[in-house]
Image (tube, rainbow, N blue to C red; front, side, top):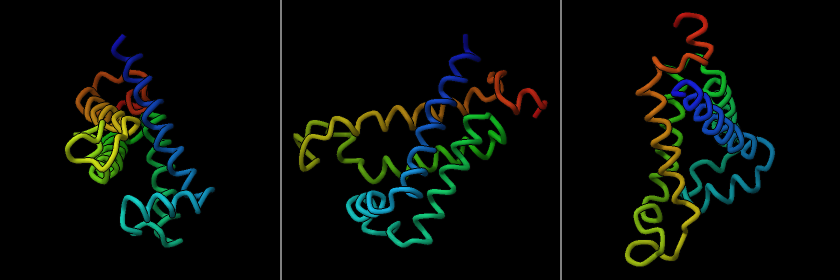
Length: 137
């Protein structure tokens, strides 16, 4: 059951990261809008936007496959940590009562992505359905 649970975590978190990368590569105007709103435009330039999108696609794919997990899982954790940091007031105040400007309850699952990434790192040796496990890494 643990191996299946880890596989499902890998699939869901890795595919989600790939979807964000795909958006940056295929829907630049949406990616730029999010960058302008949450990252003060730091990811709005073409080179940065496409580079981050490609990195998200690659890391997401590696996570899905369970390949090079030592690096891929840390990379995924870093992406989800940066994403959570950008909306931290919304995460600690999802109803917008004290810190956030308004309610953003849909941001709250960002905690789940972050903690799932930590679980995947903590239980990497139990992920027997990964390619790393199959190749003895």
